[in-house]
Length: 238
Image 1 (cartoon, one colour):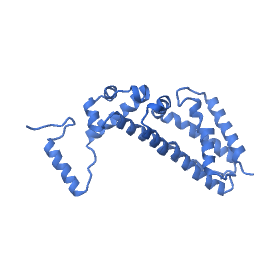
Image 2 (cartoon, rainbow, N blue to C red):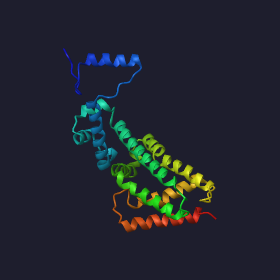
Image 3 (cartoon, rainbow, N blue to C red):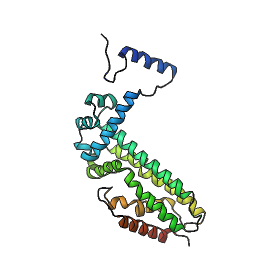
Image 4 (tube, one colour):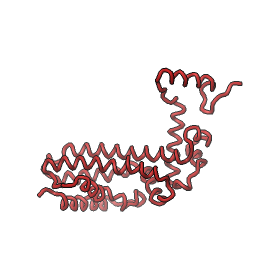
């Protein structure tokens, strides 16, 4: 009997021979287009359902319906709901971190050239808080973590902190340390300074409850300006 897999594309025996040949040659074949597209659909559906329902209430059936696949297809790609949540949440956190790194690179590259550190910080702050609108699904997941914290897989929370908030602060710390070395800031503890700047500007996510509450442009500008003012009071050059 010839067995055709759910994902299609040849007999099980031929697929096993291909996999064996790839292992022997040391070359790992990329996922076939159909498999990759289904995995991406599952991940999109999972982000939507986890962000809407939370980790505990979300079901694999609901995710399958959102993704337009069968539950069997989900289990072909992920062991269980926890593995699926881990994959989509950590990938989402890494994407936000990468965007933050790019933003810091763009701004800090020119920092202080106009001899107006306050204006540079304001420009950084405006772009930084503007990132929240680029990742609504991620912050919907973060809202669920805050609500369901004790029921979430603890190792997932720890890994999120490592690849997300802590990674962003570490990058920011290095850049602030370099600027302090140029005399633009009076900073003894760059890690503390990065944490303070993250709270004074990035903390607007708490004001909006991670995007759930819409803030006006005037409210956002006031928040950024007050955060920059407070940071310069703490770390402005003597």
